[in-house]
Image (tube, rainbow, N blue to C red):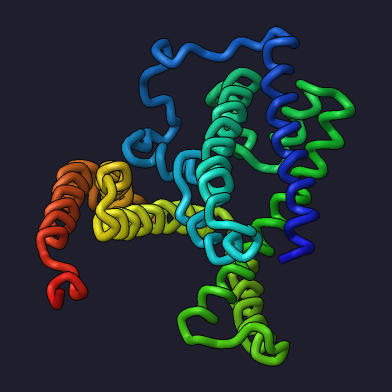
Length: 295
């Protein structure tokens, strides 16, 4: 935790500097960001529906269940709970801005069709955009970003998985042997997954990432209700993400779409399920909390 607290901020600064440089480079090099309302139509070559595929594709740039799994890890790196707002909320706002910058850069430099041909936001396009907008400095930042992002993402994913399992089963992580017993099978699972088709893995990750975000939002809403605070600030996004995740699940080719279900089914089912989740949540808020019932 101490090592992470000293090294990871450096990676974060590099990623922010890279995004700022790209944002400035777009305008200084005369690139034009397409007007959204001039392209407010489905331009996907295969005709994939915008709702809800776009929200699944953007993934962490919009909302991220994966980031929610970092709570056990980040909590161990903070000195006070008061730092939570800056660390968690601030980080997600920053990532949203960074996502917008990169989306603008991709559209301005490549355009929709060319960006799809290039394979989307992979390491090659990151390197190309940085080189185009920032020259040799951009190339250096791109290499650091391409190297740092997989390392930090993998490290935090494995560490948070280990800590989550340890919390579930009350396994003391101060003991090196017990820590190793959890680490080895988790790394083994990661090794197996790394040999699968990454395009397929990414599609499943994107959906489960947003679905996990939906679950966390509902859990946070119930927590806020029990704390007698305004739970609508998370309940409304939870309803929206429920519609996104359920719609995608019912029409995506890697999910129920493989059985021939289309948007004609997915759209109404997604909305109905989102409304059902809200009803279940509101019904749960009407029930007395166990501690309050005894009082």
